[in-house]
Image 1 (cartoon, rainbow, N blue to C red):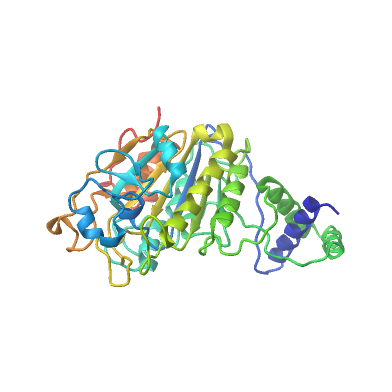
Image 2 (cartoon, one colour):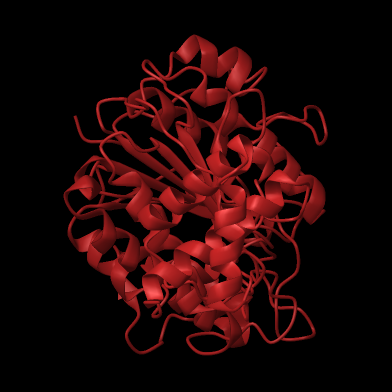
Amino acid sequence: MDHRRRLLLRSAVAAGIAAGGGVFASTVSFAGSDTGQRRFVFVLLRGALDGLAVAPPVGDPDYARLRGELDLSKAEQLHRLDALFALHPALDFMSDLWQQKQLTLVHAVATPYRERSHFDGQDVLESGAVVPHATQSGWLNRALAGLPVRGRNAGIALGANVPLAMRGATEVASWSPDIMPGLHDDTLQRIAQMYGADHLLSQRLSEALGADAIAGTDGAGMGGMGRGGGAAQIEQVTRAAANFLVQPEGPSVAMFDTTGWDTHANEGADKGLLAARLAALDAGLKSLREGLGATWDRTVVLIATEFGRTAAVNGTRGTDHGTGAAAFLLGGAVRGGRVVGQWPGLKNSQLYQGRDLMPTTDLRSVMKSVLRDHLQVPEKLLDSEVFPDSAAARCLPDLLRA
């Protein structure tokens, strides 16, 4: 039996266990999910990315003083964006996108949340609500209901679990790589034959085969993807995302998350823990663009985190939970090569509570702009249902290409 057939059969076993109440889920089906073939990818970086490291304001006169050993202003291969901002040296592909005007930096950005709990901060970011635990559904799921034309499974979550942002009344698909090594080929064959006599299990089998055929992965276990995985694991899921999104009647929206961004200790500057994570993310984004091909021109990718980190270095050579963060929009549909938002400064009097980057842009404004101008979700729906009580968070102009 060739490798491809073995992969498909293993995915079928996972689907069958899911139908019987087990722990795996690999069922995907699509029907006419089309909004002019536009695509949106939401990437959630769990753990609070250090915005002053990923997009250092090296032109701010107070930056070097605050950052100490994390100062990147003199780092080799630093990617300068303008007189004030740069990109971390590990972000080669994102720097290329900037040069191509396909990357926009949104700095000093935050949700309405102002405390420092990862759990609560992620809940506010994913739910779209003003306070934690206000709803059990996510903003992205509710937005899918407002697409002009929507079929079954217009959205897909890639990873071991469906994140809160994609949960809700609107049906979405989910997919994760095979994590069942070691089964013999003949065992897989017999299970597939056994399922053929049951309509439900046979349907699950067919959906799983189709999903993995679209995803085009090599069957390697997902391991730490979404739970701190490295470059190979992130690239695996971005390749799968691209393969789903390029289908003519595939999903309009995809989401995945990664962890490992909680850099309390030994964060590093141009090299170290954070640099390795950023390089893995950068490689994954490059893989996504390559996989999307011409679809990239109709795609917007939003990268966001639950909150930022402290402006100053802590006693363990890292940074603690903060407030203002950095977010990125990238893709062929982005009007890039720009920094969006008002820079608040890094003087002690300009910091939030004397320690954090002061937020000046509401992250909901960024998300609403993409949903309205790219996916054509009505603004009235965005203000009232997708992001409840958010009328004051106005859409930002000209983020996307006409």
